[in-house]
Image (tube, rainbow over all chains, first blue to last red):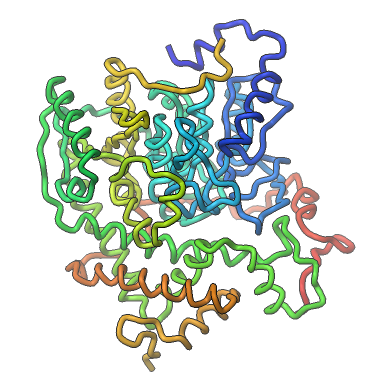
Length: 448
Length: 100
C-alpha cells in the first residue's frame, strides 16, 4: 500500500493541516526548506512544488531576487494534475537560484540538512528533499537539469526520481536549460513516486516536447558499474558502495564492471550546453515584466536592463557570461557544437549498455559536506561533483537515487539508471530494494 | 573575419568586457577580477572535450527524438490576462518599460 492510500484510508483529525503547517513553519526557520508555506491548506495529500514551477496566485521566484514578487497567472500542468488528483498544495520549496547548484547554497537562504543542519541539503531541489525527509505524508514535485533531484535526495536520505526526458509536461516550469530540464518527484518510497508519476504524466497541448509514450517495466538481471565513475569517488563512498553491490549479487543480480573512458567528458558537455541554454533563458529577466521592478523607467533601456540585472547571484552571472561565450560565432564549434556531439556519443554508448542492463553508481562521489566546506569549493570543483548525475541527465535516461547506507549518521544514496521510457523498471528496482532495507528519518511530521 | 577571443588559455580582457555588455551585466572591480579568473578556470576545464573524437557524429539538440506536433493555428484566449499585467506596472492597459 502506498503512503497516499494509507493516508486516504485514515480519519484526518480536526486541525491536522493547521498543526502540520505550524510545525513546519518552526522547523523551516532552521532548515530553509520552503520559500512559502500554504497556511490555508485544509484537504488532500500534501504535495510541495519546487519554486521554479508555477502555481497560480502564489509567488514563484526560482529563489532569485529578479523574480521577487512574480505571481503567475496560471499553474503548471503538473500542478493542475496533482490538484485534480486530490493532492493538496503545501508550499513552494527552496532551491539554488534558477537551479544553478549542487549543494543548496546558491540561495539567499541556505538550505540545511535535516539530519544535521551543519551539513548541506544538496541542490538544486534542496527544499524538496528536506520537506520529504521531514514529512510522513508528502510528495515533492521537483525538477532536475543535471542532477538536481538525485543530489539532494542522496544527501537528505530520500528517494528521488527523474523521468525520461519529455514524459512529464514542463508547461509552467521556469526554464533553466530546455534540452535538459525534467520535472520529477521525491518521496519516501518508490511506490509513492509511481503513484504521483501516473497522476502527472500524459501528453500536454501546452508543451510540444511532452511525449505520450507509455513507460515500460523491463527488469534487467545484470547491473553495469562504470569504473571511471568509481575512480573519482571518495574511499568511504566506494567502500559502502561495494557492500551494496555484494547485497545485490546475493539477490541474484550479475554485476559487471565496464570501462567508458570518455564518461567524465559528460561534465564539460553538460555545462557547456546548459550554460548556453540558460544564458538565453535568463535574457528575458530585465526588471519590468516578471514581478521585480527597477522603477527607473526614465533611464535608457540598456542602462535600465544592466542595472536591473545586478540582482542576479554570482553563479547566475558566471553562467550567463560563459553561456554567451560558448555560443559566440568565433568559438561555437569548439564548445557548443562539440558538446552536442559528445552528447550523441554518450547516448549511443550508454544506450548500448542499457539494452541488457541497468547502470548503477553512487549518487554523489563524496560524503555529505558541511555548508562551510561546500562554500570553499571553486566552481570547477563544484561542477565535478555532478560526475555521477550528469550522464543520465544529459542523455535523458530515467533514474532514481535511493538511500542504501548511513555513514556517521548521514545517508548515502545510489543511483540506478535505465533506458529511455523504461521508467517503471527503476521504480520496481527500488521497490524491491525497499523490501530489505529500512530508510531512516529524523522527523515524521504529520504522522497519523 | 575570425575575432580573437583568447590569449593562450585566457579570455582577452576586451572580449570579457564585450561579453558583459552583450549580457547586460556590470561588475564592480573586485567582482570582475574574481569572476574573470573563475571564467578562465572554467574555460580551461571545458577545453578537455577537445580531446574527444566525435566530429563525424550528429549534434543532439534533444536527448530523445521529439515528434513534430504542431497545434492548430487558431486563436486561443488566455483567461487571465489581468493576472499577467499585475506583474508589471501598467498605464492604460499597456506595460510600462524603459525608454527606447
